[in-house]
Length: 246
Image 1 (cartoon, rainbow, N blue to C red):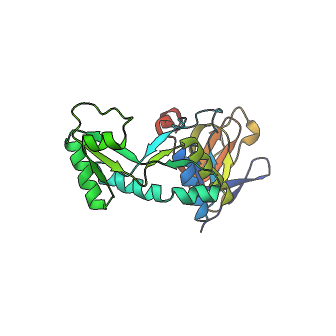
Image 2 (image 1 turned 60 degrees about the horizontal axis):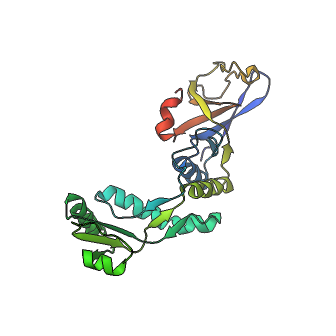
Image 3 (image 1 turned 90 degrees about the vertical axis):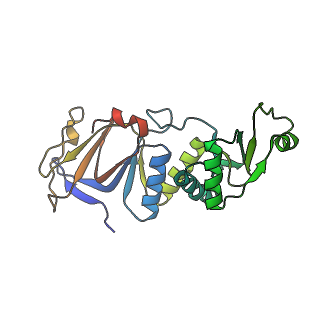
């Protein structure tokens, strides 16, 4: 596998070039960093932790997880992800999910029919419930008039803490050698051989590229405090991507 490179700087020092830079401290960024690090790749995650900048779309403390979905692609992805939850929790020591089951109900419309069809194709265990069955099993639950069918997924469904999952993934990434720079990304640019870095607020970080392979891509990821160099950049900033200067 490829490892990090070194380039000479304009101040006579060697600057590290990571193989991979993941931008974003959300659930996508921390997961990507973990899998790259566990595969033996050289990776740095750049993004602020919660409360230090644009952190991610996971400030909520509770989110439903389930396999049931009218789209098979989403149900398949959910099934594979949920199957990995116990291992992530065990290896990180962070308990981030609670198995409690999922009940959905409504009229027998396209949504429920497609959900049933996908569940049958994927052999997802389900309990079919009529309104009277729901009322008997959950007497404290008010069932709206007009409900025709309920679908109960008793296993591999419940709720999780995205914030704790985020911390668990980052902990595992770092345990496998990933580096985390706890700063907000301001700009991403592509650097060419012999091209000086433009970082006006930190002139001591100006770098003159002198590498063995001038055609090899090098990206400059600038934060509020330092510049990170990488051969590859994965942007996992979600809806905040448009705020980056790329």
